[in-house]
Length: 418
Image: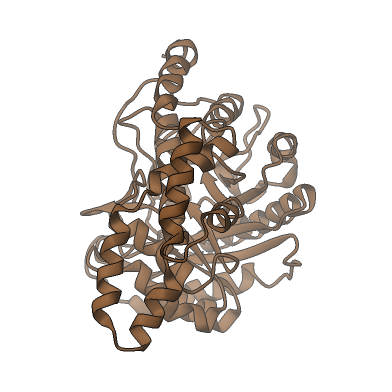
């Protein structure tokens, strides 16, 4: 009753600004977030490789209880999912296959190695997205995969890319929702290269070959993702933002922008409406960069709020696919999931509750005083009461009570794994 009463008061507050909280709650419930599987096991996967190698990424910390196999990861996700309001998606990397104890190399992965994931996803009503895994493999140790000048290495990874598209299409057919297959290739140099162009021309040829077979977009949608730099590729990454923006525009592919893959002073939010008129749609990886590291757990900070605010102002929630990409092994991994997704949803709700039409009218009339004043007043509007009502309607925990549930799960489940 307290939650409903607080919501009633909040609804009246927002009505004074011409904002319909019921419409905001409805729209928030229609925004799925693709939740990354790799938070539960520090990006290790289930090939038996162990720690991440290559790729310019690493998970720091050694919190006990990480998932060691697909069943444990699925169980962990189901628990975390029960603490998150709304309906969402699940995002798999190719290295999370179920191989039945056999050695399955990356150029041999096939739909049959993911049937368990599909059956599980259908039972939950959760669509699946996908990613090729171009790291943690002996043929990635030299720092190059699809952009390699070694034809043997390049051919191996081209085959891997082709097979992941087949698997993603299988996901789409089986779940009834197109699977977004996101290509992130970490190729690059630690020090100043002598040949940037050569590797980029090779990467273009590799991607063109991978994408040569057409799949219906009802089954899978191809996406390409850039990065500014990585650990061991500080000076040069072949797949830069400019490279993939040009590739996506020229090849009709979905462009993925990761909030942690740019210079710390760049605004990813500002890029959205600079690119969207030309691409028509985008995919966003919502993450939190802290200095050099791009993959801290998402919080409701100014950068995250700005991203969702720009999407709302462009009326583009139907054209922008939202995923999260973070991994933190220094805290409870399930809590990281819950914090990251709920924070993203809160940022989206804050955007949906903005009186955008009023702000735009003030701006177009030259009344910048009112524009700034309203923007500041919005900071202390009762967002929390509306969020609590969203949780109540979706049978998700209200407030911090979910923390105790995570701690209980840790005692009864995670501690037994140590």
